[in-house]
Length: 189
Ligand code: ADP
Ligand code: MG
Ligand code: MG
Image (tube, rainbow, N blue to C red):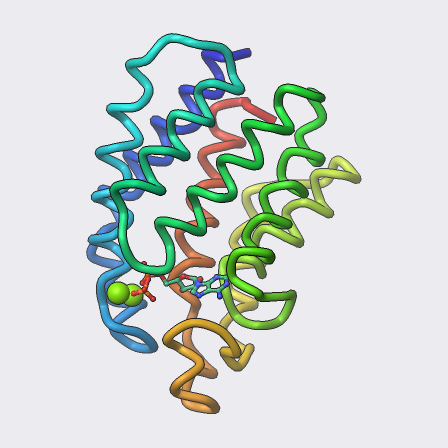
């Protein structure tokens, strides 16, 4: 199993590099334009963390520590907390929907955010539900990301824009979309 998990995180990191400019463009529209840079930096530390030996739980933990300690902005600590929760859950169960539920809970706790706030959580939560009923597909992931367009931001920098945040995809939702595309791609589900 650990090989598929590593593959998942490798594919995610590659995608973050490929979409770096796009992610920063999304963040320029409703934030400070650094999400692509933050995540690409995170991707480098994440890849480096994969060199360390260990089981699935250790892989997630090392990745979490790398993001928590090296990546700034809102997204580093949020992804770091989520991966730390995955590490803990992976030590208890193989049920992927439980892993993602724990990750979403960690994001909500750290960000004091909830469904509909126009954040990465608006991808994590519906992905979790789809995983629980065995219906997660690439098309659904894209739909969850696109649905953040119609939301008004209530957390993070985008919330400063109020109504003007409507009509734009949330950058963190988009990067989380890449995370879950990579998850399916790697066969880590
Ligand atoms: P910063 O906003 O510090 O520049 P980034 O641009 O890297 O950090 O990340 C912004 C993304 O982080 C947002 O698009 C959103 O998805 C996510 N985010 C910000 N604040 C919160 C929060 N309180 N809860 C959940 N996610 C959040
Ligand atoms: Mg930003
Ligand atoms: Mg910033």
